Structure formats: structure tokens, C-alpha cells
Length: 363
Image 1 (tube, rainbow, N blue to C red):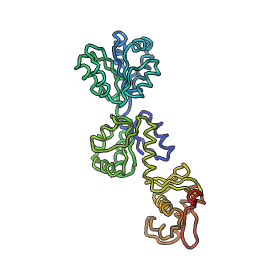
Image 2: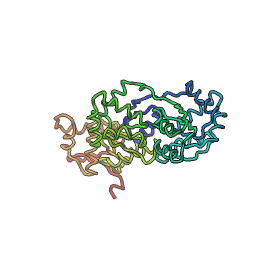
Image 3: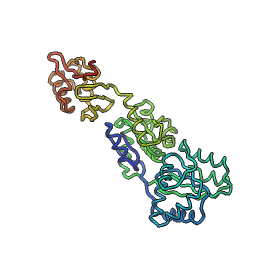
């Protein structure tokens, strides 16, 4: 699986790896905190001097970063006092959690986690002559500033972090080619700017047709943490996998459920639960270090579900033209070694090989 995020990438990679994924990391963008940004400090002092009537918080990490920046400059108590008197609107539960962690009370939360829902609410209530502070994510305003200003509000805009260039441009370019040529089974996106940046590299490297075709066929899964992140993909004709809730944990679970539903084989063996997927096999929770040919031999045995597989069939899935029984014996020996359980594959004299199934499969 390819992870395109910079922020919280280690956490996401660890969660996927624990579930058997082989991880490739190529961030499409870097995130630059604005803790020492003079513009952010100036806007914060402006908000303290001229308190807002409404505060719109669009991201949890952005709000926490803002509070941390104010704390670093010794003005956090004054800022929190001012914000505590404002009507606070949050774009989703992440923003809600960050606001509550700062000891503030939220008046309303956008369940859809979209800026459009926030705009609809406030415009319906009326914003004429109100002073509205909007904390943005790194991609900018999502049109909120212009909408509120056009309706008569006085808008103070705060960008607490910015998107920067990818940390490793070579790795990013290699990642899009890996996705195009079939070396990657899934690409994971956690932000709309990151998804847009990755897709632009896909287009600049002239592999867009191949990537989109793989997504449409189902060979490549594009997974987005939420509907906002999914938009750049949808605009290009890609239907992404989106979890019910916009959380990294929910995204991981959605990917696990997807691949569990597309496993070629899943059965209980004497060595534990065996799952044979498109490019990987997992035995008793551990990913097996198999070569492509070893994986095909194991898939063949799993498909037989405990029945004997003749040596000739084993030879057919091995590379090359050898039909010598020794080649099959070597392949089976390597499979046993990789599995760490010699009892997993049994040799049936003069007939072939079979998987040793567990009690539940034999019941």
C-alpha cells in the first residue's frame, strides 16, 4: 500500500502493517507549521484586540497549532478568554475535540465535515456586520472568506499551517509509476491537497490513463479518509473507498474489510488462519515472505482446500519449462520454510501435496 500523507504517516503505516500490508511511503506534500509565522501572530493579536462574534474552526490540528503558537508567544490566556465569548462553529468531530481540549465550548458542529454546511448555517442566521474569525487548513479558505464577506461580514482569516513541497520528489515520482504498472494495490489519501498533488504528478508523468484504468477495474484501490479528500479523485473519474467516519482508524478498517472481501482463499489450517490475497499471504496474523511463484503455489494448495494437488499442477504455476519432480519438491520446501510451519504442507507419496487443515475446516 502506498501512503501519500506526511502528517501521521507513521501511525497510519504501523496500523496497516500490523494487518499485513507492505508499506510504500511517498508524501505528495509536506506540512509546514506556522508557529513562528509573523502573519499568524499579527492576526492573533488583532483577534485579541478586536474580539470576533463568531469563530469557525475547520481542522483540529490547525486549531491546536494555533493555541500552541499563542502559548509560545505568551498570549494564549488572552486568546482563550476572547474566544470563550464568541460563538464557535466546528467543521466535524476532529475540530470539536481540539476546541474542547482547549477548554472551550462549541455551539454547533457540521456533521458532514464540510465548509459548505458551515456557510449554509451562518448565512441562514445572518452575518451582516458580524466579525468572523476563520481558522483554515493549509489549502486555504474553501471559499468561506469570500462568501461571508459578500454577505456583509468582517472576516479575519488565519492559516495555521501551510502545505510545502514533497519531502522526496524522486520517491513521489516513483510512486505514481508503481501505481500505474501494478506494483501497488492501494493508494491512501488523508487530505484533499495531498490527493490533488499526487494526481498532478500522475498527470505530469503521463500515467493518468493507466492509473485510472487500474482504479476502474478494481486492481488499484484509491482510499480517501473522507468526502472532501475524495473530491480530486472523483473529478478524474475515480471512485474511492471512503470510510463511514473521517478517521484514520476507520480508514484502516475500511481497507481491511475491502481486502477481506476480495481474498481468493481464507481457511483454517493446523498452523493457524491462512489468508491468500492478490499479492500477499498471511498465516496466523503474520505476513509470509514468499516469492511470486511461492505465493502461486500456496494459492493453488489453498484452492484445493485440503485435497491433493498433483506435482504436475504445482509445476504448471512455477516459472520456466521444467517438468522435473525435483522443481516441485524445491518449491514446496521453500514454502514450508517461509511459513515457519513444516506441518502446513503434507507430501502425499506418489500423488502430490495438500494443505493440512484445522479442526474447523474438517468438521
